[in-house]
Length: 417
Image 1 (spheres, rainbow, N blue to C red):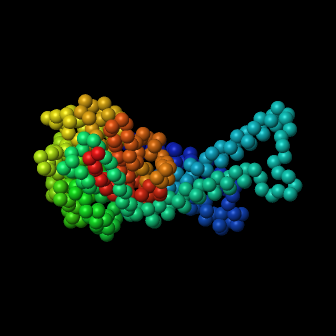
Image 2: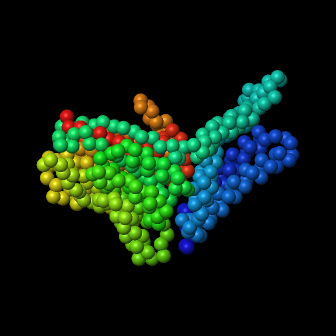
Image 3: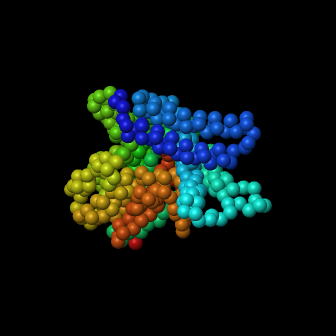
């Protein structure tokens, strides 16, 4: 593999810079007992060595061939460690600014305040560095707990929506949405069976899957096929593709191998009994009435994500008037294309964000880092007479846990008002 500077050297330099800076705090607050102090220092730099080693391996080898445990949990713990270390940095910066100010004052002959009084045995530097490390322990412990308790805590959310143009023949229909299964991250089939059993327990009329069946390659889904085949509904199961379903994040020996992986993905949806909608629509009919169900391939506003979706193609031949329900994996598609499209889309179902798998997710207050990147990142949004619902995802990716923003199964009851 050709060596990539931005992919390996730059992240390594960032890791080393963070660790060298944080290590100053570790040295200040560490015990004076020589053996214990040495053990702390070794443990600190061992994590640095592990992170650097994994980055180098990911550069020169195929990261996707690594054992699942390493990809899921070792990488996850490294992310937690460095996220926690970043929390320390503002405290160290404040301390450096104070000490820098004192140095400047000393050079110009200005008397500085006493750093400590006679009765105090801890310096301001020790206090700030200790406070920084304590502050870092909060996200560290929270994120570790999210790995232990969070990834397979499934929440069923129920939404009732009424539309004037929704056909009366379907009044009260129950549509269930799941999204972002990411089979490549699941370590056991037992939890997948638990999720599927909960899905079937809802007794939905129709089930919709809005993309990201896998992390990188289609074969990640194979060991779950018998379980996922159980997902059935009287009016059918329909699906669309997410950005991870195209094999764009894996390394392929040839274009032919990537094309085969893509064909395998199409075949997998078919074997599961899911009707995959690729820039197309179907008419859901009953008692002489119908509504349109459309699905587009992935389209993301960010340059980092592919733009395979084609609304014009999906809506071709669909006259104005009927209620239209659209599956589109990436919610940024809504603001960028869907709202302004000539064909009115009543309800869009999306996923993709996972709610960043971290945040505060209450009925009257929601916050997550996801909102820094996505205007619509979880739950229901409305503009004029158009709605979008962003599912928080059933699986997980990268960080192998969830804190606050739980895995989601959504059941919509649609009414004709």
